[in-house]
Amino acid sequence: MTTPREALQRAGIDVNALIGHLTSAAKAELSAVYRYTILAAHSIGFADEGLREILRDIRDEDRNHFDTLVTRICELGGRLPEDIQSFLQHEDEPKGSIFADWDNLPEALIGSVQEAAHSYSGLRHLTEAKDLRTHAMVQAIHNEKTEHVAWLREFFGLGPPGRFHRGFRGRSPSLAGLYDDEQGTRPLP
Image 1 (cartoon, rainbow, N blue to C red):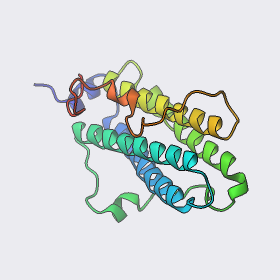
Image 2: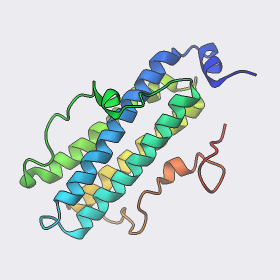
Image 3: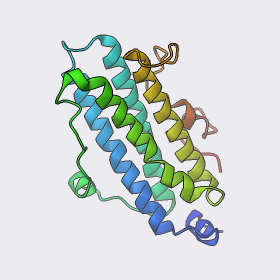
């Protein structure tokens, strides 16, 4: 029986490089979960409940992205350090603090999410027509990041209305479509 790693090697993908890119993306997602948790908690008293709800929704979907990326890394034979400090040790710090200036909060939040969406372009290119499973996963994450930008633009009055739906928290609709059971635990081939 062919392992996923062997199948990708036959397709011409450098699996170690792919695992490295997936690991970098997982680090960024975990860092985003942390930042949005802190920002949502910190904004109490400074921002309305609508913004906190959007931040929590983005955080929950980023957690789903992290889980999905780690699962794929393990499927390909990769391993992550068991120690969180080792995992995040080489992570670059965010270029600016989204906490520093509440007056620039809309631009900082939107820019942060846009940068996260853009970071998936290389993975999409690397896996296109060679690794359909990873490509579909990365495309789904990119779609959700694009939707996060739309939610923020709408909230701050910079985009069209009607995209953010209450009670939708953390459901990751693009990723959920990649699974064939209700618990989302058994990915499609």
